[in-house]
Length: 161
Length: 175
Image 1: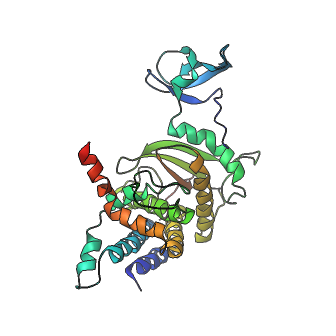
Image 2: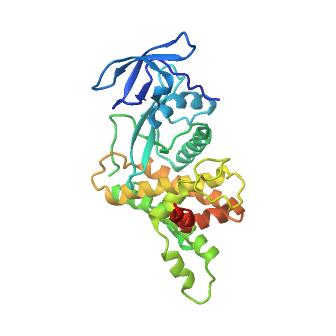
């Protein structure tokens, strides 16, 4: 089961306020419920003593919180995707946008190792990996379309020509 | 060879050797249309007789890309029923294979849109790896479809590709 316990650093939306807020402090009040101190991600007021029912996670943030746990259950990883220095996590980027028809989408992009050679065989391996990820994400309640892909190393993108 | 199989072969052939950007884009577009024709011909076969000549073809032409993608996106969670599915349609929880087919269709349609219309590649995605992933995705969808195509869930899925937007019309008109 995925752990969705609120944590410092999580980005949340707050009922009655515009924009995204970052959890700066998370404590359990005398009533046994979570209380939060929140800073705006961009512009907006600082908020304190916000109760748990007031906050919601965007689809993007839900994916951000769930993905490390899901990845841990989806080993082995394709060998051509970059891992962080500790090799305990993959290098990826998560962002939300809209598809061409306006459908909201959360896109998870993995970054390939600099020496990864393009091949249909490895593309099959990665697609099977995405299938396993998608299967695990059935436990995460998101409305957006969830899409996985890979691309060349950051800063080394080029179009074959 | 069916049109769907021919397009799939065409997509693979475009990626052999040192493909240029036009080849990469056309390969992704062909991969999407391969899956589109695979599913749309299956829809036509299910809902329309082969005689008189031309009727099934016209049925296939009546399918709409956006409607199909919208319907396919409802089949995104294995082990569940699509939320928009009317309750009187009896359906076991959908399988991972059918989810793969549906998800591949949605993903490939989006990729095809980029391939055919985003001439400036505004998201810097066009690459050999990108094209291979999408062709691979279509191939995988073909394999999964061959496994599930005679199942009850596949019949519901095909009907949804054509009718899903109108399935709840009666309920809507009452509200």
